[in-house]
Image (cartoon, rainbow, N blue to C red):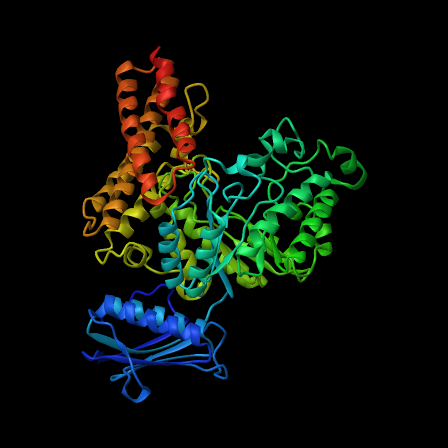
Length: 607
């Protein structure tokens, strides 16, 4: 029996030895109470059957249909769940709601993709572990994706049963009256948000508004017009919680942003705040935790005024567990942590004791890495899923950040997106999936699986160095080090650098086999190639720095010249690839950082 790859792997699947032959004139029938949803499902069936079998199945009456989909609100099927039965002569999908019917069709589509004529006779009964399964995409450091990129991403995530998307925003929404903040940054516009919201809604994805509202506010506070609202005017990063102007500004932003979304949730951020300057006197009287909580409650009241449920990052409140019981019982705590050993169990138990709803929020480990951190990524996602289930989390939000120039390309996140979709749907059946094959087929559309193996092995270059660095790969940090303080490079030593190069060579055996039969696959190949060149460059720079530091010699001019030439080529290709998926805003910032740690650094030693 041919191996059946599915993403996510269903909760229960029983496969028989018999086959079901797809008729040449296959037809389908679909029924349900939500006519608009049913119309979308019908169009979805026509599209994927045409893609998978070469002809679009036609809609017909039930008695003549090969595929029957029944949405019955009284069916004893879990919310978002479905039952998929393939017999020798027909296919039946049953659900209690259109969500479940859609997810059943997504599973059928994946089966059709691998079996063009004869389907396996099987029975699947399936439903999710977490009702809310999301992805949060960073569009503020420094990439703002083109709309086509976002649409394609929604299509892919939705097919894996992800039902929530957030666009992490600091300054990249075109707020009226605040042009100074987003000019030249290629922000999302109100019309684009409306279109994306509708596109997501059709595909059973909730687009949740996201605007960081306390810390991470430096993109605003760096401007003279807003600097007076900073907690620390000399280090304008956090809004001052005791300045009435702070909440007035947020009210203006919320009133512009929130009406564009149909979602009733709203992520206000509020992580990594730094207090103790303008609010110092109040902190002395009340305590830092109390000052944070009081401002958070003001934000909560604003959110409720707009009829939304507040989500917020839980890192600050975790420092003051005595205040957790005072949080509103309908505020959703987002417990985040991005290392494989993050204490999800302990932290979630503290929240659960107070009966507050909460999400677990791991990450793809792609940021600060160049090409991902495969081992940490998979372990972090499993940790979050298992401990979220044990402690009663209602959601799983998989985060994908862009710190320090957003040097990684989008395919570096596909393993994290796909594996996260699997373990958030059903952890038990997805923990041990063949990641390389599954991601190769369903993320890269590569039946040879070489793309999946390449992404997997490039992400293991981080581990090959022999050292672990938190929230970043060693070679990424090495790219930012210089001769005067090469700590990570010295920890890797020459052996670690050479082992990383050997791992790169292993990955390249798959790069040479990549499929390039369409423009998307050519782009993916080029993105992997430039990421590989940058990793190689990091190894070469590390070796030079290690040798010069330990031998107490100056960098050879010939080596510096070679590194400058390589860096120039990498940067030019980085510019080209950036604009294939993203808007120009933010590109200059990303390139400046690349040049700073390569060409500018090398030129200093050339003099």
